[in-house]
Image 1: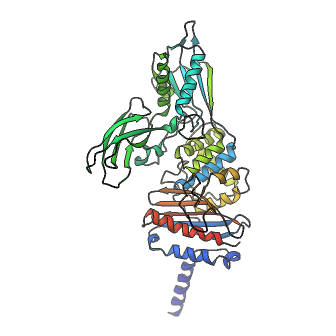
Image 2 (image 1 turned 60 degrees about the vertical axis):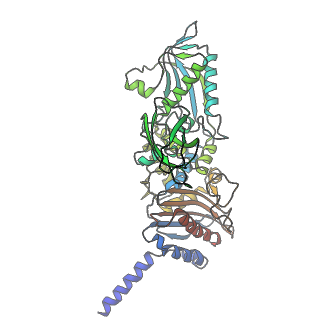
Image 3 (image 1 turned 45 degrees about the vertical axis):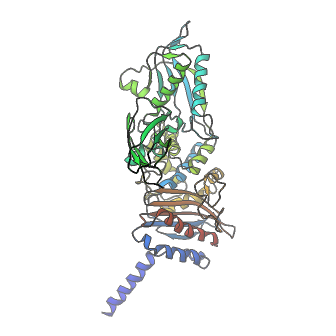
Length: 503
């Protein structure tokens, strides 16, 4: 009987050890506070139904400061963008630029009639016509640039089509593991070999003061060809915000918008994703050409549509104009600072194109996994379904994040990646951590990419410690039961403890 009791006691002790936070023996005496904070985090009632992982590694010594469930695969949300952008910088280089080419086939006769088609050949540029300062011309300026180039070539009439060519990337624009609730909204815009205006439009609504009353859809800017929006939005209660969601499938001409917007509003704007970006781009160019009297007899189209209809005949093309993107360093900056899903998806597919010749999501994931292995990152339990982290089916371990960032500290493009991370508690930073740890001793000392989807919060990046070290860390929590803001606060308290780590 005594032997059974002794064995039971041993098993309880082992079980307790395996489920408890761990610090390395060399750092144990100096990391009591982080160890205690981990224990407190583990015992938090709001995490009793949750899965979470934590990993912190000294950049200076390479020693693990602390960890808990560090090898558990967890949904990372937008923190995944750190892996996508880090890989893109090292493989493509910070000076890499996308190119979009305007060209035509056929001949221009003496009267200025083009007996052929005008093509916009996409180069996978996610920033083409983007509505953001510092990322080149907006979409209206680019359209004018193209109109000028066409007229300069002597083209006064087009017998054929204005064609959008998105073939540099695969036809699959939206990853199959994205949610139906996401893909019709601006943050769920699908990638395209010919992306334009970040593949988004603005829908404007008027609402009455009565809760539950119908709203009126007044306009859509920019105009989207052959598009119908079915409005099911109502006025919400006083004090409510934007709770409207757009539901639309890739390449579909119909979108349904449901939910509520604030009451008694005029011109309330929500943003949606364009289902067929290449067609949208061709349509916009044809509209501008018609304004200056250049008519295309066969309307606007895409290579995909013409191929499906058996109307596309490959012919030699003549160059008209070219639009070059900002360098990759700037694109990565905005990808992480503003967590732009579209940009991350483009980077993933361009990685696939660069290494394997085809711009597919699968090829991009393949190259990311190869890169992680060159960084001595154990990829067991690494599941990548997209480049942005929007899919809830992604799986990354805290150790994979931390080990990559530890190695990356000595990579060529570390400064560029580091600059793209948001600065905690810095109100002047354009990133998403302005209020995170604001007013604490950790403000301006935590540099991280955050991630959030329903019941998921994640942070990964670097902490500059009080002792002069730098800690590469990751903290992810899935399926917590408190509010999002409360979980954010609790995670911030744990991360802030790394400031006092001595390695």
